Length: 347
Image (cartoon, rainbow, N blue to C red; front, side):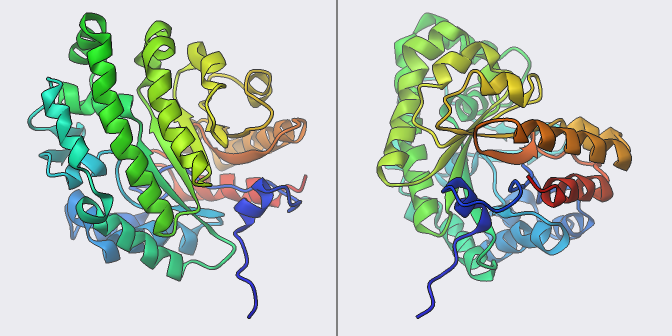
């Protein structure tokens, strides 16, 4: 029997020379694609995400239209609590809203009950469908929201600029809040393991709101929550990426985490970040998605070339990506320009 070929991205991370950098985009199956908008007209968000066939169809749209090296399955960072039955709605121009915010330690005990094969079975089914549809050279990525970021939505009820309730809890009862985040973290670990078992070849943990966390809380409390998740994944041989945003004050501490790679924002260059993260990890990023939204195709190509050239001077693995998710309204030709430049410049 002929051996199954590993995806290009995974071969690159394993040390094989492929002549260029792998590339994909966060939120690449999203509203900037006309094909996505056509499907979205027929379903609510949760109807799309919880229907395995539809979720798989949406996840695969970028592969059919753009030169990406990986698919990240279509879902949301709040799918885990949604699967548990927490009333979460998606509101246009607002984002996810938790109808009954979790504001006591007892309310977080619901995560002890989480069984991914029961509560998020549709996720496993979608991943299995995607894996069958993907050609062998394309990687399949899973993901989840990190406890702090998911907790922010669940505790506040929706994202806001100040996170008053979350931070008030952090200051008044840091250990109690940590225990709640730990319960959420244990469920998150199970969820990511389930995705891997269902066909994902690497997973990414999104901590979008980590920039609002003080360094003292990260060091004294949150670091052990993250270590538990990433150590658990590593023990099962599951490659993992940690995405953070506006978190330069935490870099020296994040470097202690047993992750495969760090997905980084646009606030520092890859060269600057190269000096701060362990050489054993790869970096992923970090073209500003605003450039794709507002820039010209020529500007996108120029900046992408510069990013690739900068990465080529580093003594570490790099995956080309954006600094955050691609934004609604982004011209498809700009997304294509980024991907083409990232995949045709040989290094």
